[in-house]
Image (cartoon, rainbow, N blue to C red; front, side, top):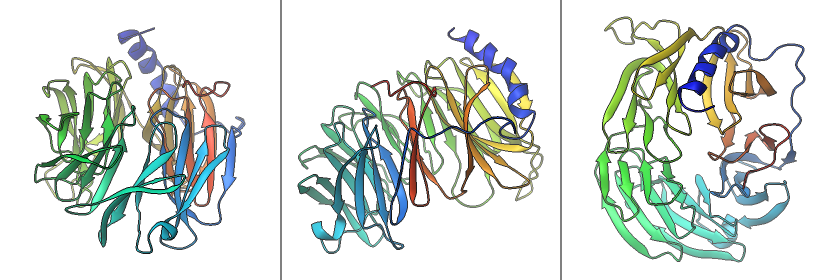
Amino acid sequence: MQGLGIAAVLVAGLAGLVAGTSAAADETPACPAWEVALPGKVQELAMSPDGRCVAALWGPGQEPTTISVFGADGSRLWDAELKAINPWLQAEHVAVAPGCAWVVTSGTSGYRYVWAIGRQGARWHLATKGTPEGVEVSHGGDLVVIGTANGHIYLVSALGEVLRQVEFGWGVTRAIRFSEDDRYFIANGGGLFDRAGDLRWKRTIWWAPFDASQDFARFVIVDQAGHGPNVGQIHLVEANGGLVWYDSLCEVDGMIALDGSFAMVRGGEILGPESPPACAPATIRIVGESGSLLGEAEEGPCTTRFLAQDDHCIVLSRRDQVTDRMDLECRDRQFNLVWWLPAVRPAYVETWRAGVRWIAFADWRTIRAYRYPADAGPRR
């Protein structure tokens, strides 16, 4: 079932999603496909573009000291000690190349370097103008895009050659995503670029995430500052940058269907001009590709965040507003519960890829991987 047919099914299932607590008491929580405990806190996880592995950036103290790469089956592929590569090396973010043979790390405000690290050690490094924040490797593994906190984007070859620097002078580029064919990439703080670094359209995405249909024909963009009142705008945007629909909401979040035919939007209406503003209870909406409202329901007792999806499953986090308990849920297209993960700590990190049927998350020191649907393996 495609297009509005899928949306109709989602609308019909909204009531069941928002009616109660995050997971039914008589439901059995899912068992992980695999899990591994590390002797230190996991600061970040990143999945490779081909879905074959995840890389964990972790360490026993406040600063990460180690990169560990795990296969989709949980096997430990390789490790790298950061200080063995360079005594001053610091890392806050990581991206993994397809094939899992190397990763790219970005540094800190006090260490403005990016390193490419492989099984045999360092491959190359690069000093950046401004704090390196976002880093991503193309699906083909031939292009690395690096974004900084002061409006710079670097396009770098897999061998470390700087192909182009783009200075657009606004925003913090923390999130970067390539199209499936690697012809384009979208970067928060900038907009949509082609792989040569030419800006196709500009839209400042200050802090919050964006989402794209699989063919990059539709985008959901959340424009919300990382400080101040928790109010932002959500935009439905076409491939040419044209605005289809937008709204201003409190605590806004959203996700677009893989085929671009509808968007799921979460947030509360702004009730007045005061700061901070008064907000209505949050609702979950289904918005059609033309911007029409197809369905809406009050969120209920659990705060919902959209995490991932493929043809079979939508992955949500659901935080109980009374107990602060947070679960991860996998729901089918009727919003029926497929599996759930109980009592995830509020401080956790997760990683996924569109079209790859598994998700990994770290709860402090433990990495767990779950497949969705529960009986399916990775698509790739």
